[in-house]
Amino acid sequence: MMKTTASLKPAEVEKKWIVIDAENVVVGRLASFIAMRLRGKHRPDYTPNVDCGDYVVVVNAEKVKFTGRKLDQKVYYRHTGHPGGIKEVTAGRQLAGRFPERVLEKAVERMLPKESPLARKQLTHLRIFNGAEHTHQAQSPEPIAFAEMNAKNVRSQ
Image (cartoon, rainbow, N blue to C red; front, side, top):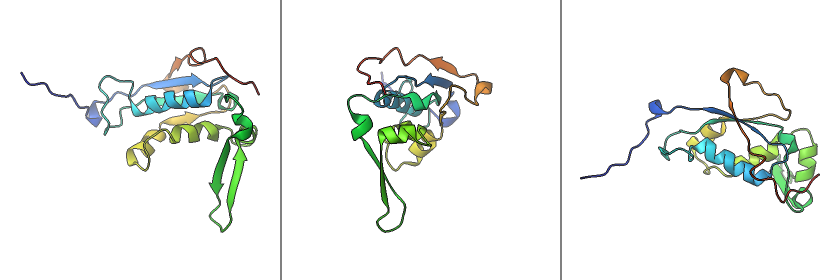
C-alpha cells in the first residue's frame, strides 16, 4: 500500500476571519501567533506553496507590551532614500507616536518568509487597528482570546 501526501489546491482553501485583542500582550509572542495563522500552519492540511492562512484583524495595537527594557533599548531603523538619510526611533517612541501599529506590523512581517511573493500576499491578509473598533464586522470574525495565554513577564508602560 502506497501512502500519498495530500496537497491543497488554491480553489479548495476555506479562509476564516479571526479578531485578536492585543491589549497587554507581548509583541513577539503575538507576532509569532499571527504569522502562524497568516501562513496556515495551524491547519492539518497545510501546504507551503499555497496561501491557506486566515485573515487576521488585530485591535488595540497601541496597547501591546514589551518585556524587559525593550521600550527604551529596541531601535527601529528606516532610510529616506537620500545620502545620510538613515533614521532611527525607539520602540517606546514608535508606540507613542503617530503610527503605533507599525511595531506589530514589522514584527509579523519579519516572521514571514523573506522576499517571497506568497509572503507579500499573506501579509495583505493582516489588518491592524489602534482602537477597539474595526471595519470588518461584515465578515463576522471569530474572536481569539490571546491575552490570557501569555500574560506573565509583562512590563507596564
